[in-house]
Image (cartoon, rainbow, N blue to C red; front, side, top):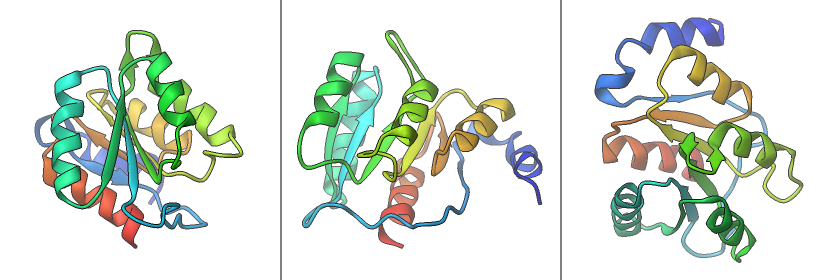
Amino acid sequence: MALTEDVEIGSSELRTKGFFVTVPRSGAHAPLTASKPVIIIIDDDESVCNILETYLGDNGFETRSAGNRAAIMRELGRRPLPDLILCDVQMPDANGFDLLHKFRQSKVLGSVPVVMLTAHGEKDDIIRGLSLGAAGYITKPARLGVVKDAVRKLLMS
């Protein structure tokens, strides 16, 4: 089944339930860090960042967040490097699709899985994110369990 058909099948449920879509990619990514996997949450909504940081932290992950271009650059420059990035699409001074494109071109971040976590849940948005190289796509509002399961699937498989 083609990517477009996969997205079409589930797209009617995306906005109401939160939904995780992923595409198998070669070269599975093993966590880069020796201890807890590091997740960077890129979202301009501070409450979303706080909830995800707490929830994922309670589930064994180290989290950091960034809500604007300057903070994103600062967090991506910190060590340890992220093992996974959760990225919103629409932010005041950054676009998640543009960030994803830059991540995929980066020698340092090129293999780090990026999961789009966004309210942009139209079929074209999902196809765009996955086509640009996202490891997964979660629509908001998303259940915390969906986010945790997606992160575990990508980092622990």
